[in-house]
Length: 188
Image (cartoon, rainbow, N blue to C red; front, side):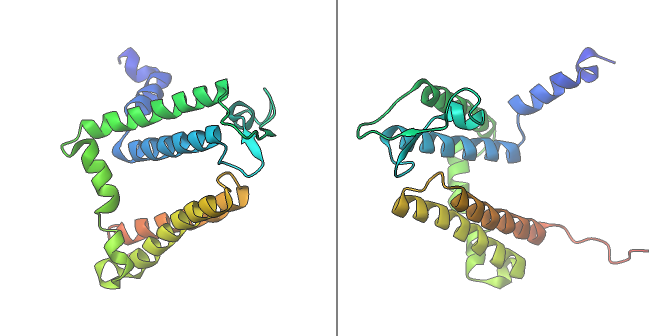
């Protein structure tokens, strides 16, 4: 038995640094969302009255307060740089996985728009009712988050996150159920 197989920490690090396609989707998506939110925070558009300290938020205010009074000019602090750096690392790890595939990074971006989920929004014959309701729930979750964020500058509102995540998770669950292979009818 080699040392790589007996060292569980090596396999965890390898799994995190060389993610599967599904994990790379999460890395890229969450990393890009984090960079987007960090830019909004620097420009002062993440909340109507507060500037967010990522160090305070991610450590549950162990290092410093999570919310500071917002000024009229853009604010850039060290925690913004660290957060953007962490999110950039996540995006780059995800993109590295996509670049090793035949379609590449461009194929990944194209796959966000052109896939078998969005046509199911209008036709239940494409994937059944699970896929139709899953696609609508997914779309409504994303739309709710972005529309509320744009209209009310509520990008970090916990209620908006709760509603959006519930819709997105329900949509993903229904899509996975629609795409699941059929099982055996005999349960004996």
